Image (spheres, rainbow over the protein chains, first blue to last red):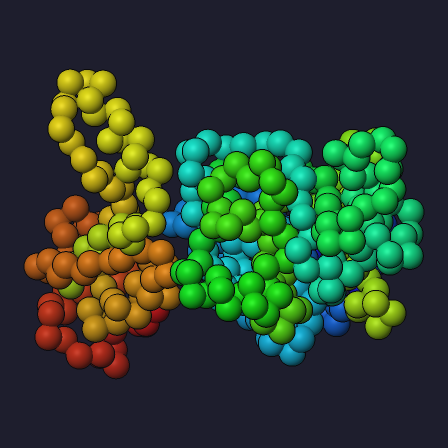
Length: 253
Length: 114
């Protein structure tokens, strides 16, 4: 898989995204000035503060030259992952439903959060499920039922979703969609990640942390899987997102 | 034409900025203030006010979460850039040609459309 990581003026997490995707595939930076994706198999819209978050986060980046190609790529079924500011850009581009608003608590928050993988059957989360053959690091989050009572360690209740521990850092991460839209999204598996119980800090409706489009090939999340790809930094749970994409792109998912 | 666009969070959507202001006012002794909302204002000179709604829908506001209101003001603002003969930008041009001027063949192409 060749993965293109966009870089806008004001992006700041593209290098981590490049390294993270680079662990499972070939990855390259694609400038916002380009009009062509040069045949990549997947696109990552990274985090940061594109165009200084002027007007609204993601509102200007959405019209950057490269975005026309990204929108066409998404419409053709190409895999597009938006992280944090990238999620905001994809919502602004209307590739994803809903909008991201200032955190309810008004603050920029940076912390490790636990996420429930509500839909482990997407091109972005298929490798996060525990039964999936785990490549090194991937799917790791499913390993420890944190409240396990020692005695039954490993015997997870069958309906417990896999969880991921990855960092979140944003001040505009409150996901909002009208109730009717949310119901539809829930019905069609578009709500992919939720903050685990007690973990939501930004006021997102229904604790939503990550959503996909109806077709499932465009996915955005506020937390940062690219910052959690090595145990050295506390968790490698984020890797399973990139591994899922690789499998989907190569058709062995 | 000078226009002003007022953008505010939709009713019913939590507005943390408005809330912060509402909580700060009583600290300064301004009691009894409620339902404070903070939005944005965009002022612009533009050739064709008929396109303002489209501008709002596509960029200036996010219609999913924001309401907007358009006010048309008289002529280009006096605070705009001066009509410098070397400046071929749209505001100077608009001043020269006045409101009814149609698209002129000879005029500079700058700022012809969005």
